[in-house]
Length: 161
Image (cartoon, rainbow, N blue to C red; front, side, top):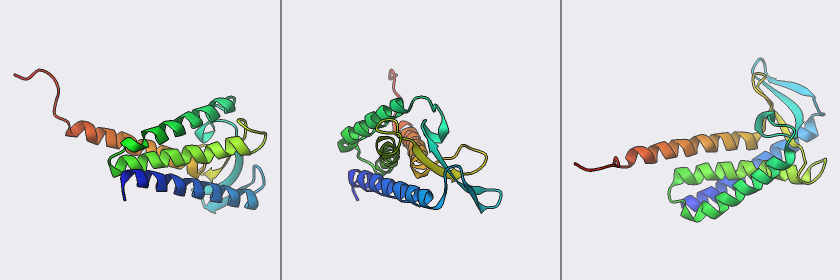
């Protein structure tokens, strides 16, 4: 599979998984309800987050909506220049995560650009999050690794003796 196709397929799968898991959480839980899944490790806790990933910056929902649009557009514009599978997968994860949460911000209450993101994965030692948040973080880590790998394969620059 080409890196560009991998990017598109990864983004599609992330958006689908994100929206399906959010629909299940909304159907199974009431707002604020928490159910133990793995004792001492994992709970399903339904929260509606107006802020950024992991519940930070709750007072700026419009800013994060615009930021998600800009990030998604930048990845789509850069996609033709992706030539390796690691970057394709990483950018697909970031794009899918951005689009998953963007859908919530555009289409969920209280309204467009201010919609609250559905979060439900609760580890009790970290703010509640969702599949899109995980995809963005994993994608960003993979991009950092790809950058380090590319940097280490370049010959040193500078004057030659």
